[in-house]
Image (cartoon, rainbow, N blue to C red):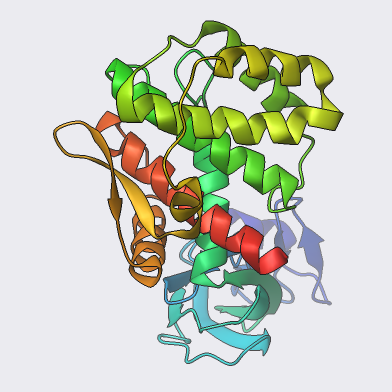
Length: 320
């Protein structure tokens, strides 16, 4: 007989003692020698998630408590576009995020049952974004992190992808970044307070070296769009940008770059090449979605910044 049972042997009635650690002790009664711990289960379905249409999504309830004391798991969808759940009776279930026209919220309930048939439930939410929306969100996050132009502070999670770029690539990347962020703010794609962006742009207008050739034309496009954005919001920045643009030249067809009819490439140097808008858009979305969950490096900086401009310009056009 266990010490707990010996302590309570002889009691006429069953007594339940709370132990303060999510357990109860069923103590002995009469001359019985039966005793056990009963762990009240706790369903932990994992944090809410934001995913893109077409992603394979995992619902993870493996941290439900008590560890090793759960005899069954059951996942049930309770809201949103219907999906086919795989392994719905296991700790980890999965599904393919459905195609959606706009952001959609899917809810899932996890029910766990312990060894003594006690149950608990909790719910997790999965927000599914159209691929284009997810690409825009990724671009905006990268633009405030590793794709910040050199001389600006980046994210603490990933190192800068622009710090070691050669001058021409750095100038082109800077121009694409300025263009994308200016359009995002002007057209409501990025609804955050633009003050930090204006402060960062002031640094670029004052410190950026003056490139030449195609790189300078791309950089000038970015500063031109920035100046237009700052015209009424920040006259001092507008003046600094005007000074920065003196003597500069523009792309022959800047609208083509914004519309996706051309794109910036890094082959043997910075160049602008013609492309099909639908192809450019699909390629840009794919490139951005591929780096959602990791850091980027200098080899990707120009390509990803160009992709970010493409998806943001497209989203801006949809907002008009």
